[in-house]
Length: 259
Image 1 (tube, helix red, strand yellow):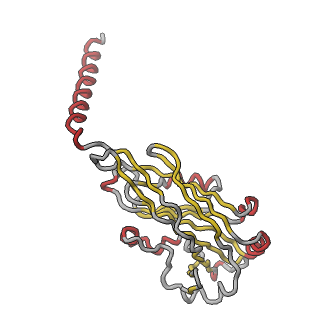
Image 2 (tube, helix red, strand yellow):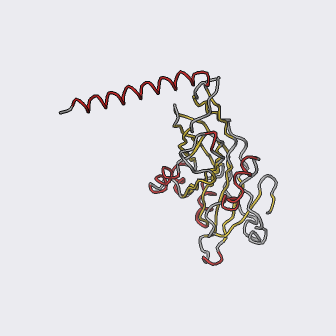
Image 3 (cartoon, helix red, strand yellow):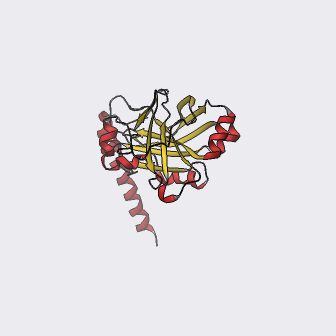
């Protein structure tokens, strides 16, 4: 790994699609300890000469906000590059480049892999993957950490002035009972990287460079998820049982009166 003044570089074979692949076996531990998922081990030899004296795109602004209501919301990222238009065009003429965003999701929130694949099919994302706990049915108490990795092609951004808006749909899991009536889920800062490779590269020797965009911490996002009050458990259980019993008796009575 080569360090710059504020950024560092990793490299990986083009055959490895996702950055988080390097941590798949220990992802839960990495996320629970808030460790960096962008560091790819044993890449020093791959990086030799690939990023020397290259003027790569740099971020000037990054914003994130949680929007929506209820149990289905969206994280919206606004990303702006500070390079000149000519500099960006020159870079993208020689390199295939994408913005890689890794959002680490805490317990209590999940991203639906099937829903995200529709974004790839509609060419909104270049690629996307969910790592960690992908069981969509588990309640919050039984779930684990997960992470979403989104690849966003920079080439179409030329028509948007190199200002990108990325939306990540998220869903709340059923939280444990709590006397406060709400469970709060907080999001840490996402990882942002630039992934690029030379356009004229033989597949057998193809290497992608990962440049940490060194984004400053974005705005904190917190999601207050409604949850049941444990003090109401007995009442709700009794009411549910009585309702089920009345419905069952009604069905039996209607069946017995049918000629």
